[in-house]
Amino acid sequence: MARSTSRRAPVDKTEVIYSAAVSLDGFIADEHGGVGWLHAAMVPGEGYGLREFMASIDAVLMGSRTFEKSFELGDPGGGSKTPAWVFSSRPFRSKGSLVVTKADPTELVATLAPQGIRRAWLMGGGTLASSFLAAGLIDELALGVMPVVLGHGIPLFAAAIPATRLRLVESRTYKGGALGLTYRLESTA
Image (cartoon, rainbow, N blue to C red; front, side, top):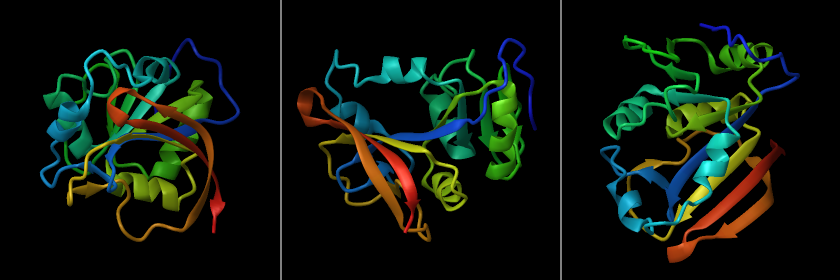
């Protein structure tokens, strides 16, 4: 389940950042898991803060469907040098810095700080994100709100999540009308 990251000193806590592009009506993908709508809405040459965000991330956490989609798009987990964990009960062949795990999110996150992982990106997957939120594991919510209404699809969070108070810490406007919103989670209400 855990892996050693040889060059990092342990840290006190790993922050988990759920970061996702989302339609104006709260969907992260269409009903088939597709993100073509996102690419169609993006303005060429606009970086949307992705380079800075990726430079701040030490690890990637994702569900199996998100992994499969990112693999199709040619980016399995934010880059091959970034340690990545895929939560899945299905078998996968892990490669490079990718680890497939059946671990409970709380158990896995507890192994990250001793490995020196300061910030972990919870990537896509409304169901997995809901389990992290319910366990109190999400510290920050970073959203790229795109000027698109999908009408249906995969929601940012699945049903049955606790009410949670958020504090806006950053708001950015990008070309084409997209918004970058960063919230810190304060508490469950």
